[in-house]
Image (tube, rainbow, N blue to C red):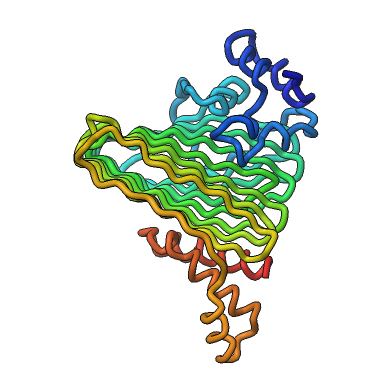
Length: 358
């Protein structure tokens, strides 16, 4: 395979070894790779020059340990190989950690690891931004100890000329809980990928996401949940709207033979706001246990014309009525955020973005 100048520049930075050989033989993920068929990273980065740039990371406090990254996922491996020292945070009970990450023109890679100790409850709030010509490749490792609870909120700013890949790998111990909510507005290409190893017995997982992509923007939300023990629960709710942009949802729930009594539900709903909008979705279940309750759903549609007519009859402009109906549709995943302030902040950001693209 002939590498693009960007890939060649990246390969030159890698030490000799399997990762460099893999990049040289397969290149970056592209549309011929099933998991990336709707998000062609290789093509979108082909015209980038490969120059490196620092990632601006501002947090509510400094890291307290340097983890040793290890992953089977190629983008996480590249982040570990090309980024600086990984930054690790061990959260205290009741702590809220904030990470604000911004990428400037050039390529930046970084790995973060966040640990929730046994029995602790904590919150992580992450924001991601990428300016024109920026490529940010970020890996986030979350380890939630037995009986621990983590509330995670991810905000992704609109980035018309930037490229952003965030790969999250999460280990959920027995009796632990993760509540994750994502709000994204897309980029030249943005992929928010979440992998969860679900221990089962007593553990609970909720993944929620809302996305709104305008003209020329692309947002991919991909999830893979592996149930590896009995009595685990998973609930996923993703809702998105596109107006002359592209939304992608790929969700897979894997249930191992040992994961009896699993209760897993996954729902995705998409709203097409004009004729140039595109939403691609692929929900999947792969089940090897015989005593489980698992289901998934997926649907697309346009704004309900009867509801639009009803609202216009009460004096609202068509633009205002469409914005209100879209907000009502997208708000459901955000309404499940427990923290009222966070919930209102994200809803306000969604409302502001709706006004911009109306």
